[in-house]
Amino acid sequence: MQEKLTKKDVEKIQAEIDHRKLEVRPQILDAVREARAQGDLSENFEYYAARRENGSNNSRIRYLENMLKNAVIVEDSSSVDEVGLNKSVTVYLEEDDEYETYKIVTSIRANSRENRISIESPLGKALLHHREGDRVTITVNSDYSYDVVIEKISDADEDENDNIRGF
Image (cartoon, rainbow, N blue to C red):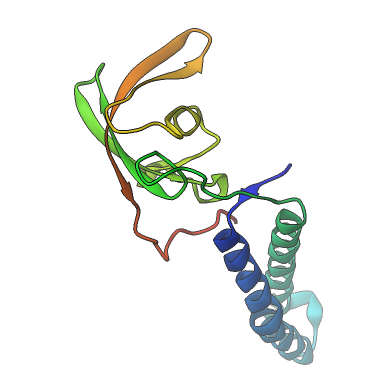
């Protein structure tokens, strides 16, 4: 599956790979060596825990490398007054008579609990490239859709805690 990533996403993923290979992996391998040196491996919990941690770290590295290998780099082509990637948008939900604010992000940064929605979600796709005051129909499936009105668009602050999904 191809992930849509920004250049910043690629940089963060590569930084995590480098950190895991150059810092975490040597620490884990030291722990494996120390635990192995304690003697009988059949009852050595520290040895099995260190090996499990090593496997988990290597699995995460492979996952991230595969993600980069299959990634499609996307850029925000929206103008300043349009909904676009890494922008916050406040919408008025007519059905519920309430306002919601979302940050439009790539799928690996999406987190519904933090109102970060993917450019690939029905809401994200529908809002892209619309302007303040536009009425947008969000089609969830063939049986259900709803309307929102775009109230405000702003550049979202770069959040260093925008974690890339993982384990």
